[in-house]
Image (cartoon, rainbow over all chains, first blue to last red):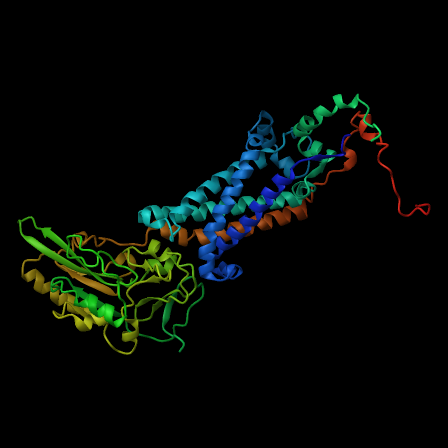
Length: 219
Length: 311
């Protein structure tokens, strides 16, 4: 039988996503504690300054490794397609909830794709610069100028990552139905068709031939 | 006892307690008088109760090889051949310079872990140190070291405990040749000027005072025979400044970063207020032309708990 709803994310994908999200908040809040004096109080969430310094890099590495899990599963769906250019040109209509003239797009819209690749870039940047400034294990292998560049780029990549996630979270609040897709996995057909029509056509294409055999055999 | 003489405090955006007025002090190290006896190293170790591990002789007089959490001052020896073919033995007592604009303090993320006293002494408060090593990144002189025992940063305190009760630093007290002297910064400058006149009269035309302006001046100063090329003295920086990378990282990027994050959140909130949520009307979807969707599976029994005729 055909379910009325469509599965957008499997249980494993959802778990993976939320593990990355939890680690993002932990690494992010502990990083912000060290980023600006006004936010140093956040170190109390982690048991004080020294614990924040100890835990932050481990949480960051764990976030990176789990994020790779998402990359492996979603990178192919984040290739840009021809419709994406027009979609981006009409981003103003998308922003105003007026969708006439906005082209159909695949499983991800170009904004999500840009976010995906920016996140990957930030994560790689954070990992490599983070290793350089990890005083307990690695800093002794690097020259002072390298460490200074790494400090600056680490802060920059962290800032870009946080800005991206603010946009990401807001998009979830704005587009009703998308948080549910990541919470329990399912979206309505109307949602799929409205927001990701090419993907909707793709996942429902197989349904047609299955109409012929009797759907209801007494079981 | 509350400190009332703190004129700069790490990771603090308000004015620290600073009502007490103090004269700026300075330690003047006259490299031209230094004989490299290392008494200052021993005095430092004794007064501060530091016992570094015994290291290895690597074929130089430098002993130990480098500063550490337990070695806050160190004689660095350089054999310099002049253009005239003479050998000069340049000996520099290395350690914290106590900058007027300390790079360590600018870089430190932990409130109160690094403070600057009104008399110019830059002091680390290990109680507040979190061991991140940002001070090392910020320092133009490569001075702070993280201890492997407690993961706290250490460096020369200019014997702030002794100076606070009117004593000179331990290294000054012990120096047998008077190469290290201590007093008000003004007095030390005058003393240095006399030394430089003397050195110039003895053929050291480039003799001069090392009090680098790039870090706002320092509270540890050197008299150098070759003040035109400080690099000769085991790599003493010619024009030390807080690295522009550190300035950028700890300067504009912090408030601008916070502002950007705040604006992003506000932008989202007001987008929601003005444009509103994007809701899918479930009847927006035209019938699929797929009767299967509307066909009820006979294996599914509907059950309405409000109906009375329940089993």
